[in-house]
Image (cartoon, rainbow, N blue to C red; front, side, top):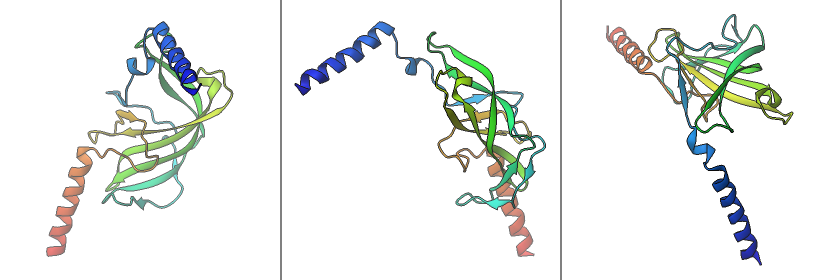
Length: 183
């Protein structure tokens, strides 16, 4: 009896996929978004530090600072795969509330911002009136001050990416420290 029930479920799933003609999850995937002129980082402008700059555990010479945005309400662009059109990426500006923002720096030069924000799910195209929370990081890849890379990351606190210019800055600081200490 269990086998028959399992077969009915599997057959139903296969027929739905065959009817749809595609698997939406495989036709629209991305892990990061690059914008040459840089992303607008919600909450960054006018933000004030809420506590002292703190060393990131396990990341030598990298510090983070928790920021208090001047305003909690802002807008952000959201990206989602279309359910109706295979391969289409839908882009929309939505109103959101900033839950948490912090900056990451080396030698006082910020290379990343971490942002956690919340939205009402009905604002992003679902009919379910439930609040949802997302976490996103913005990276300055070349030290220009433009945050050109946007990524959603598993780790909500520590950035997964450390740009090359940050690593070179760390190496320069260590070399200078060694020169100073040897005199």
